Image (cartoon, rainbow, N blue to C red; front, side, top):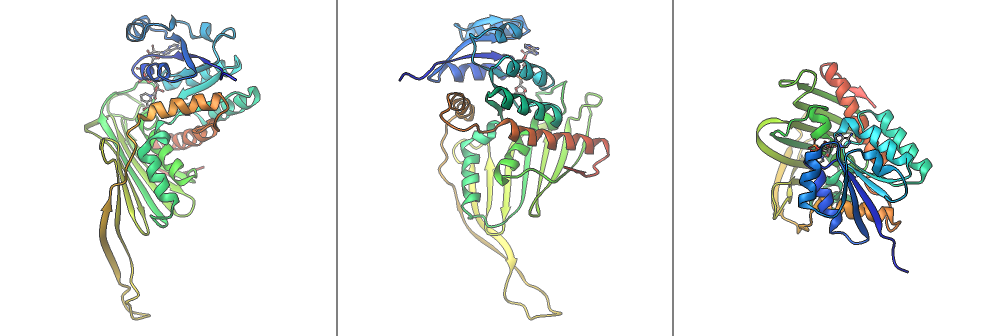
Length: 340
Ligand SMILES: NC(=O)c1ccc[n+]([C@@H]2O[C@H](COP(=O)([O-])OP(=O)(O)OC[C@H]3O[C@@H](n4cnc5c(N)ncnc54)[C@H](O)[C@@H]3O)[C@@H](O)[C@H]2O)c1
């Protein structure tokens, strides 16, 4: 039997939305039928680049009727809750850009609605589909790294500066999704410090520490106000250490046979415990160069077509939003830890 063709609408075609349009146009079993954006110029730009899809300024027109099966929501974060709620209520499958919402309560409400409507709710935590990070996950899950001690991430650049959410919601949402994905857990507590240098109340630099079950700690530094673009992660385990650098196109992942531990070479009570370090080989595993957004968009279609379970689900995204909300509370309390 011929598989159904999914008729898709993309809401929000500013900076990021056109990348979804391009990827979905290139995928089988899918037709980008409509794009919506309240900004006429954004619609004109996308029509020039991708002629074909109809354009509308009011996204509600796209949600009305049965012509569209699924939508991609790629508008600013502060609008996600309302638009995603409307789309699910209208019976559409939804792929929403990250972060899903501003509060955990909103995220959980959307998860409940998607369940009630029996619709796919997936969130564009694109790094969960990044071949380099899938490799890091494979290495951790194989036991090669031993017990994970800590993870640390840095994500900085000069801009783009958002006006509706702080830099943690914009950028640390990526790293928290990476931590939760790699550890298969959500944090127990979050503390954050940061500053709003450019816009009152909207932090442009944050330092967030997270505590996970099993005495694992993680930290992420994010900034819109930094001379250098950095996207890096370090995972330190009891047996090996792993690094990932998103800007390294050929070898983004490196596995270091390096570490430190107690040696058997100590003489009992009252004596020094000896800690020895080791410094062995570095391995650069092969990583597929496939575009992560394409992998993610294909996974959404697979979920809508019932070919694969939903990855980066609404529940997963709610875990990220709850951590971000905790970070925001901690920022207001000058870094005091917030329990989850
Ligand atoms: N996964 C990633 O790596 C990645 C990268 C960039 C952005 N994003 C996410 O994508 C989303 C959009 O980011 P962006 O950089 O494209 O923002 P943007 O501001 O460049 O574009 C947003 C577009 O949405 C439109 N819009 C706003 N409100 C609307 C409404 N009510 N109805 C219809 N259109 C509306 C705006 O006119 C604009 O064209 C954000 O959630 C962001 O976090 C994700």
